[in-house]
Image (cartoon, rainbow, N blue to C red; front, side, top):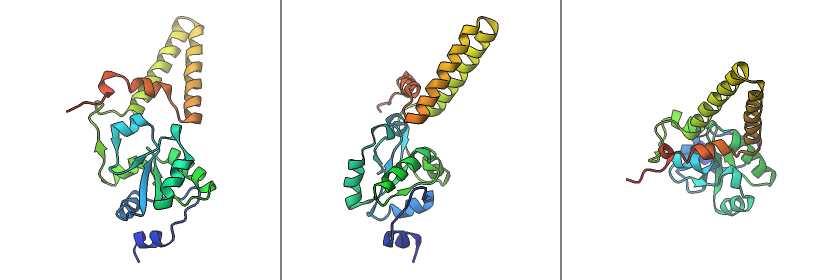
Length: 189
């Protein structure tokens, strides 16, 4: 019995259970399984896995997952697996049998599995652009606090607060703002 047959026979995961990218790819050949992307819309617009449903963490609806799980067995993924592991724990606590793609879309791409790239961006995804922008703002505020006035230290504090809120809620206002930049808009061909 291969991995797909074994999992299809007894598909019961618990919080923290992970399936590798290759195993997930094999499972998706069976109509019993459905891949669910829990990344935010801007991340999904940049690149996605063909056929994956999209239910972002910020708009996550347990009733939608219940509907899906009647017909299919969900496997969640995000960029690196952190958010999808949180969703898996929430879903499993509700008694829904589900799986989780270990390492997210990053692991999927590392396994040379197909990814749809949208006609947006200039090669750097929005999350990395956000990290670059935050780094630049911290360096700028720190430099100004050192050379001009201590009041600029509040800037680094506000940036830290923004990162804390983004980490706790899964919503990042800066990345949503950056997604509006002209080079991150969808290119219609």
